[in-house]
Image (cartoon, rainbow, N blue to C red; front, side):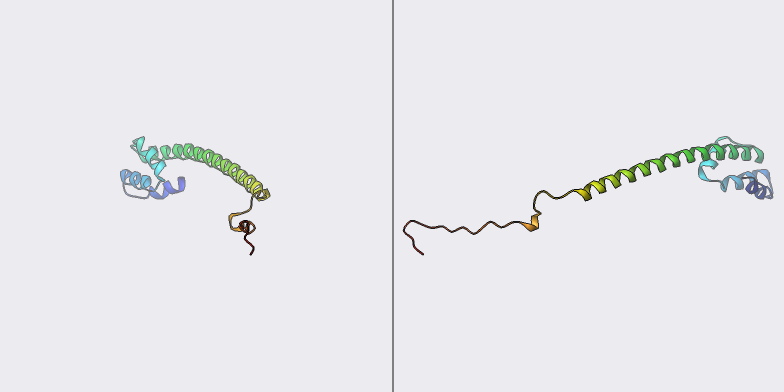
Length: 112
């Protein structure tokens, strides 16, 4: 953050520096900085540092939670796949239908 700020300070006016600085920030951090309505470059930089620390920690917590949920889902899917693989079909499959023996109809007195 500081190296970025020092590069932007080489611009002409404080107002131009603030605009350039905020324009180069990540959207969430820029929104936070603009909501503080900084009047100087130092105020903008301070707000950006606060936003970077608070948003960074929140993002890390969210990422950790998502990682844990994904790991749990993978484990559940693996268990389901293992159970499916261990099943044996109890009824014949549709394409393997067992044919019944051919029946003959006979009438009394018919000698074929």
